[in-house]
Amino acid sequence: MPPTAPRHTFRSVAPVLALCWLAVFFEGMDVNVYGAVMPRMLDDPGLGLGPATAGTIGSWTTLGMLVAALVIGPVTDRLGRRPVLAVSVALFSIGSAICALSGTPAPFDAGRFLAGLGFGSLLPICLSMVLEFAPPRRAALATGLLMTSYHVGGMFATGLGLTLAPALGWRSVFWAGVLPALIAVPLLLRLLPESPGVLLAKGRTAEAEAVADRYGMARPAPADAPAHGTGGRPSALLALFRPGARWATPLLWLASFCGLLLVYGVGTWLPQMMRASGYGLSSSVSFLLVINIGAVVGMFIAGRTADRFGPVRVSALWFLLTAAGALLLRAHLPLALTYAVVAVTGIWLFSAQVMVYAAADRVYPPADRATGLGWVTGIGRTGAVVGPWLGGVLAAGGNAQLGFVTFALAGLVGAAAIGLVPVARRLGGGAPVPAPVGAQAEAQAGAE
Image (cartoon, rainbow, N blue to C red; front, side):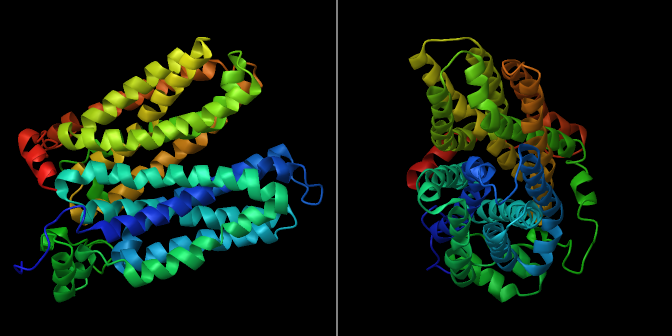
């Protein structure tokens, strides 16, 4: 590496982290605008949207996410991370414009499915980019920092629903969803570097080394280059079941399923479950804001902790604490104490899922990272479908309070699944998950 190359620190790769943060922020905003304006859409007689149809539209979005997440790895290996990321942002912006123009539910379905394709492909790409560019001993913290943007975007969407929609109507919020194409796409195409591993796989060695040198990274080796989808082996999925990953892969899928079941189930039904526990309507809704504030704080805590003790341990512990928090919320505690429990449960719940992604980075080598993360997030999306549906079934049967027990069980299963990943790697013939780096990591952290 040239002597003038920068050290590989957060500062040296800040442009990449910032651009990916912006992209995920816009995803969080666009994913959540539908829920933010749904009551006004249901009240619009010209649209003809009923509760059942509104639920179906949400399913179209999730289906788009699932399809995109499962296929995006090989696609980005062939075409490159940067152009596909820009296309992903453009897709959900176009989908938002279609929704804004829709006069009936049918084109709205199409718009949300198209948006779902963009949502489902964007997150695996951004995770893969951040994990590739971030300092290796700060990978978990980088993942947590990235995912704070999703929750900030979700809170921004809530703000749009509370301010823009009353003044200009629900369509105005979807027109705001076009902004990512106007703001993020040009920035991504102009400023985001391409993955050095992808460049190396395409035979553009000099460019790959130049990018690595510019950001203080180690120059990519042939083992870092994705062979799947770039004219090499087509069996990207089969690579996730090679020795060392064959048993860990389904455990990561199960942990991701449980994590997103919790994220989407609790996010959808927390206010109703709290009302069933005897709290008033206003406080029940405010719990949702409190749990999301806890989520943002939790990303920083989990990232720093996981870089020291490992993402597997942190994710497993966080799942267990989430289960405990869910059971505590089932009891009717004093209001101030309830707010505190909701806040700390938010710290654990959302970052437990994010640390599953960080754990996947230790299971899959760089060449398989994009496909591995795509399938971990894609399978997890089925949990995003099951969680709200399950909460709805319980609420329809007058058992909304049982949701706390159900979500606690999901936390226990998630903890077991992610906690068994190191054992599965050893049984599968792979090296164990790297041990905590202790004082060495602390010394590097101080240097950075």
